[in-house]
Length: 489
Ligand code: NAD
Image (cartoon, rainbow, N blue to C red; front, side):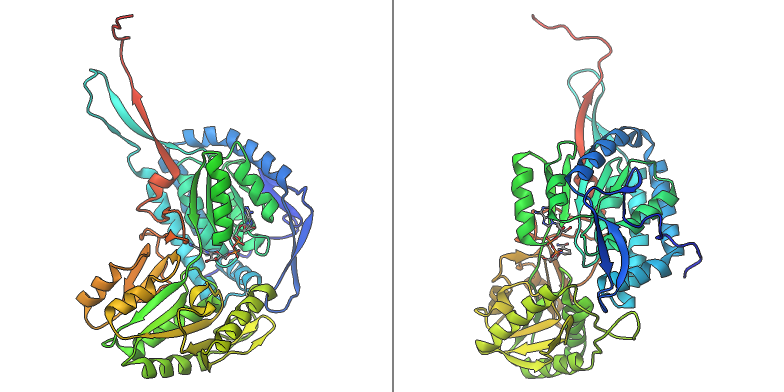
C-alpha cells in the first residue's frame, strides 16, 4: 500500500547520475522509453569511464568511515530502506511496469521481495564478525571478517530492482561501498529509485553511487583500480569477458549468468498442476528470466496430454500493454531480443518442431508459444531463448531424462515433477544445476536459498543469506602480543 504522496523521481534526477550527490553525467543523456508504447518517460544521465573513475575514488574514501559504523547501525539504514520502499510501492511499481514491460503482479512481487531482502540482509549486521582461534603462540589470535572494500555491481534490465538488491544489500550492511551500474534500458527501476530510497533512509553520501551506462561504463568499472570486487548478473558472453579482465587484475568476481532450465515431467506427475507450473515458468515476464523454463522434458506416456494442457494454457493468456490493460504477457524488452527469439523458433520449426500454440510476433508482443517434437539438435533446445516459448521434448526412461536435462553448457535451475518424491529427488540430485526443485517450477526466488549456477551459468558464486558473509567479506588473521617475542636473530 502506498502511504507516501511525495514522488521519488522528478526533475532533480532528470539527466543526472547519483555520485555522492545528483550531478550531470559526462556521458550525456538518454531517453528512457515505456516498453509497451515506445513513449518517452524520462531523460536519464549516462555515465562514462570518467564518471565511473570519480565514483570509485569517492566510494573508496567513504567506505572507510562506513565500515567503522557498527554493523547493527548500518543495518538500520536497510530497515528504513525497506519501510520506505513499501511506502512508495505504487510509484516504484509503475516505473517497473512502464520501464521494463512487467505486468503489475511481477512488479509487486519484485517490490515485496526486495523489501523483505532488505530486512533479512539487515540481520547480517548483527552476526558475529569473527572467531577467537586456537593458538600455540600464547597471545590472542583472531579470524576477523573484513569488508571487501568497493564493490562494482553490474545488473541487467529484466528484474532490475531485485537483482541489484540481492547483491547491494549484503554488500552495504557488511561495510562495503558500492558503485552500481544498471542497464541503460532500465536506469530508473534498476538504479535511480534505489539511490533516492537510500538518500531518504540516511545512507551517508559517497557509500552508494549509481552510474547508469552501457558497456563502456561497465568495462571501466571492471578495470577500475579502486574497485576490489565485481558482482555481475547478465549474459554468459559478457560474464566471460568480465571474468577474463577481472582475473588478470586478480579481482574477486561473482558472476550470475544465463540459463537453459529443464522441467522433467515424469509419467506419474500431476499433469494439471505440472502444466500450470510449466506455463508459469516459461511465460512469466515474457520468459525473460534467467530461471525461465527453456525445456520441457516429458515422459512419452503423458506427452500428448501434457502438450495439450500446456497449449491450452498458453492460448488462454492475454498479451498486451501491462500499464493500461489487465494482461498476462507484456512487451519484450526490445526488438532485437524479439527477433532473435522469432528466428530461433523459425529455425526449429524448419527442422521439424511443431507449433502447438502461439507462434506469432507483432513488434515487441510475442505470443506464448508451445513447440512439440523438439530434439536436442534444434536451437530452441540448445540456446537460452529469453522469450515466452515452451519447447517440449519426450523421453522414455529416467536415465534419458537426466541425460537430456544435462545436455547443455548451462547449469542454473531445474525441476522434477512426480508423485514419487524419492524418485524425483534421486533424479534432481543427478542434475548439474546449482538449483533443483521437486514439484515446483524453476522461477523461484528467495533470499534464504543460495542462488547461482554452474558451467556457463556462473562461476559458482551464490547470492542469498547463506553465502553473503563469504561473498562480501574476506578473512583477516589478527594476532595481538603484549610484548615482542624473543627471536634468535
Ligand atoms: P548483458 O550481459 O547484455 O548486460 C548485463 C549488464 O552488463 C548491463 O548492465 C550491461 O550494460 C553490462 N555490460 C554489457 N557489456 C559489458 C561489458 N563489456 N563489460 C561490463 N559490463 C557490460 O545481459 P542482458 O541481456 O541485459 O540480460 C540478460 C541475461 O542476463 C540473460 O542471459 C539472463 O539469463 C541473465 N540473467 C542471469 C541471472 C542470474 O541470476 N543468473 C539473473 C537475471 C538475468
